[in-house]
Length: 257
Image (tube, rainbow, N blue to C red; front, side, top):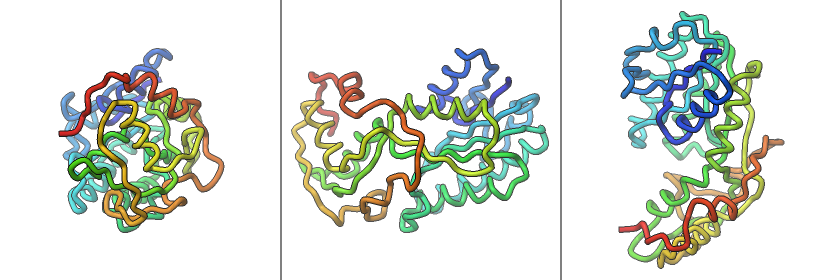
């Protein structure tokens, strides 16, 4: 099976491409660096020729409200048009659990807009909404840091390892289109403040986490329902403690400036 992965050189894309190739599929890792640009349409027709499945895991280079909306709407429209012309039988898109529950976030509004473009297309599809990745916790800490203080909401998340996201996407990609949305998540619910506190402790990072129920998360306040699955998600097997033990050596130097 020929599968094109848009954003195939990023965190999830790289893992997904490698997994699908190990399974014996013909996989194109498409990105602007390889001459495939969904924003401009460059290289799309050539990359999609003969493809049965397209998996879109690309991310916007800018998180500014207008720029991120333009990226997801324009790239998705170009991609769906190219897939329709190429006869692609299954479009898989990675989105975010709770995107439609946090309209104050420009990034999440843009992901909802992307989903709407997919649903309006005639290409069979599956939207995979994932919870936040363990790998993003350090970036979340960076954004929330002032001096030696990391100010975070105590809202509950159900984060997932990037490897488990790639495994779920690979399974969906080779299956039948759902023509709907599925959710994936990690096996346990933890407070955002506790996740980052444990990450900093594992890295011997001296910053202190301060709980603030009004702390904003990419432009919006959170509660325990904001970013947690609403139904019965597919659960990845990796627990946060196990990921920490593999990914953050206890001797790691602090990563903040």
